[in-house]
Length: 202
Image (tube, rainbow, N blue to C red):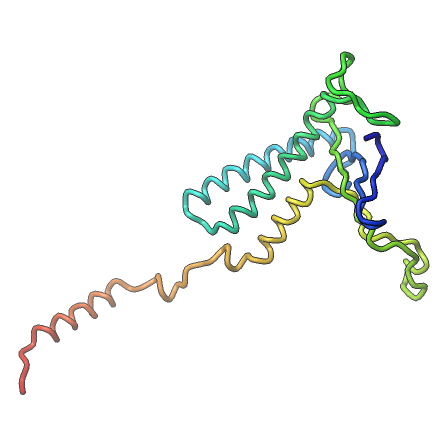
């Protein structure tokens, strides 16, 4: 597909729309001359941290739901890293043409400066907002406007799962149950022994 090309999948509200973005999920960007390289390096460090943390959780038999949620975030971040780091080297640009792979003259960007490919577009509602809404009244509105990819969806699903199920994922031991006084246990054990050893009388 060339940049901006789209296919209608389910009416007007679900489309495959080919676009690229410079930065973060849902088309957000980190500006400045070094914004792109900072973002790419941050992603790599974050993925390494998540991978180490997942390994720690698996060794300690942590809840599977937490591990799966982090796996979604890990996989989504890896997908966007591949785009950012490699795609600029592998492909030509897609402006008014289909990109060519491994061109002799080189790709459209150096290492770490590739663009992230997005394709999922859900403009479920389009129209003008009511005039009585302050500031945004009578303005044209599209929901959901951002074009995103499967990696973005995986990251979002993982984050929301952790937020929603955090009480079951991060269960703390009850201090009243686990923190017992060893002296109290000794006294109770001695009492039981004395009762059992005392002679029985009728």
